[in-house]
Length: 299
Ligand SMILES: [Zn+2]
Image (cartoon, rainbow, N blue to C red; front, side, top):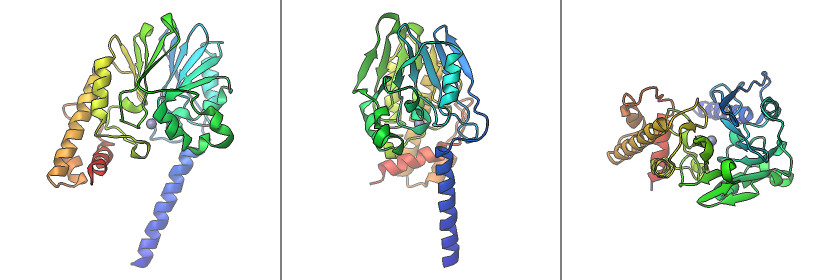
């Protein structure tokens, strides 16, 4: 009995270290990043599936080419920086002058250090606090933490180059920024809307699957005049997709809370959650999201 327990512990430790290594060590496979043109001066370095760690480059990066220089939304996973730079050079010779980090995770902040110390790095104040806990931003690397933060709303640039940053509350983390390019009618959601599946709510970084539907509802009410929605990790979406995702997350959170009250297990709640109403939705992350609701509401 004891030996079995030790063996299980060893397996668990090995699995953990493999997972950690997959996050930290860049893969040896060729680093291919695709670029998608959304507008004459707005491109996306698209995301590959996080499920395959050898080809996963990090989240969708927006490349906005303004008069003064290039603004990047997120910087993908460490080790993919050169591929990011090479792709940017295929569409502009202008230097990167601003980086906006949508949130703290390494697949969105992994190459902040590649663009020089003169780049302005912007994020929500809670994201800066979360990033300060990361090894990637300790010691000498602290200079690649956000140098500019905000609380509720911030505008960068002016005229046609204006970029609006919004914060509506906890969700994927405690510091998710939504970025609007008003002249281009485009919204970058970061991982507050990453995919058509249940949300990942990172409770260690202040994320909340309970608050997330309300945070999304506030965003939808406040942000109008948008045609294109850039999600965190999947192909381009529309405002209709975002509204549907809000309903999906509200439904999931409500059902999880009802199941918890009724004394049902997480497994039972996950099995009972049906996505038929939501065409194209996956259920791979449903159980983890329900677990996050249970953990959050457990007294
Ligand atoms: Zn994330």
